[in-house]
Amino acid sequence: MEAKMKRKDSVGLASLFGKGNATEQAMAGYLFILPAIAALSVFLIGPIFYALYISFFKFSFLDPQNAHFIGFANYVRLFHDPLFLRALLNTSIYSFGVVPIQTAISLFLALIVNKIKGKTFFRLAYYLPTVTSTVAVSVMFLFIFEPQGLLNRFLGLFGIHGPNYFNNPDFALPSIMAMAIWATVGQFMIIYLAGLQDIPDDVYEAAELDGAHGWRMLTSITVPLLRRTTFLVVVMSLIGSFQVFDQMYVISGGNGGPLNSTLSVVLDLFNQAFKNQNMGYASAMAFVLFVIILILTLVQNFALGREE
Image (cartoon, rainbow, N blue to C red; front, side, top):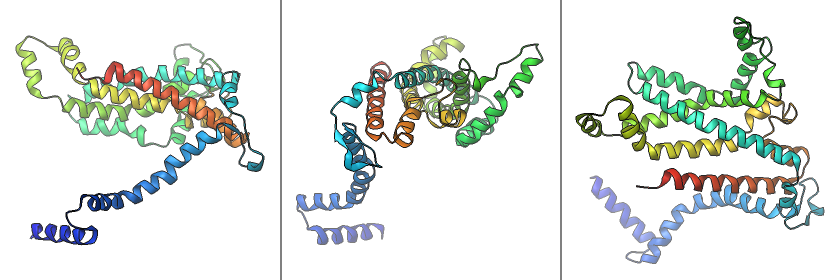
């Protein structure tokens, strides 16, 4: 019955678009994907090219009639703008601090959860912060890190007087990094768990016959076979960390303070685009960030993504 229905469907399509004609069959395929292509063109590809176009203009949406072409001036200005350079430095410190720690903790948790009893509960417990609203997480950490918060009360038990973390330029960015690691480590733990369960038991049994146990098994079997998983985790983590915005916005109130110590590239971009109405300059900033992320991803692909 099912075969007959499929045959009827194919006959119907053939009668609609022509039978036995490769060109007409290809046209039928293109017509099926046309809505998706149209949606991507209007809502994704089109805005990207338009943003690239206005990055060569002095442009504001409040005054589009007076937009004028300035060539690469926005791009040149970026590398002489102390605010952008500070935002780029903050974002780089944030990314190169968060990504390795986040990856190591994710792998460590996945290794533990993969072996213990009640793994479903621990998977859920570690994954909960990932599905929690960033604003709610930020407010919770504001409570923990405030001068009379939980952390300083705990340190007070040992006679340590903790700082005002989010109002201290030396502690504000590391505190946000700690918050980001806590909030996203569960997501990457789930990815590592999937990678661990994809390793055949035969490999471990063969390694045991060769005398490998414990640490040797981890470094010689598990970690090398998780190479592709690690590549995925590092790429996703790095892209997310270079695009950090919401935590910085909530903690600093949108100004990147104190003393620009929590100003990220995307927060600076947001301020230039929607507070200063300097859309051309903000577009140039977005494409510089895109190039940085692309280069780092290619480097990671060269280091981790190649097949042996």
